[in-house]
Image (cartoon, rainbow, N blue to C red; front, top):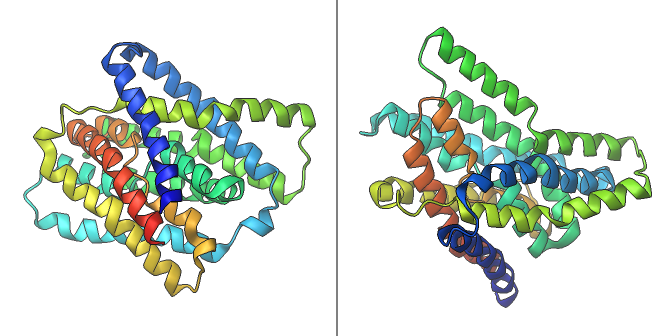
Length: 305
């Protein structure tokens, strides 16, 4: 448990640092967009590509583990589709609530926890899983937030699908898998350059996450945000844990997958809610609250296991 606490607390102290820097205007809002693009399009893809490309793919990839990792979001998605029809939430709120309940922040928080708790090997395994899991999450979210009938709505949905298919995190994972499968060697100059870029990926990602949190909206959507957090941070990882045990996987094998499943709601849920007639305010409140609560739930999950 001490090892878990020693891993989780520093990660969330960096997130808190980002929140404080934003609060004192040391990191003004107009810088968050460029910094986020730097992390999302350059630093994290460089890290994922290098880790996967230089790894033995056959040794790190397990189809059974991938199946156990993809199953829980599908279960939550199907259960949510059935249960939300009898709730009093509006269509925009229900779609945002559902995608916040299975769409995890893999690139910024999930991979950070995997690296700082499981090390290089855990990060490599998590990076391979993240590419497939991220693709599934985004496709399910497009379905959940599918626009109202109309040409403009269909075009907006199509644009989002195209953006998903060219997601830099997904593409970097797939490119790394190709290099690993065909054993293409990375020149030392390229490898060292990628290592330098990778060094800023996780710290900068955590600071950007902290600076992007919005405490103000939590009070207005507290009940829904807490309910979404219960599903995302407790029920979803539990379904994953049960799936891993049912598939006969050992703890040392499934931990990278569980770390990804236990990640809080992704910040992209806000973007998708704003673009596809969801509830951006609910998405912002949910992302903020779930991110803060995940410090506790990560500690509990990793400590129990």
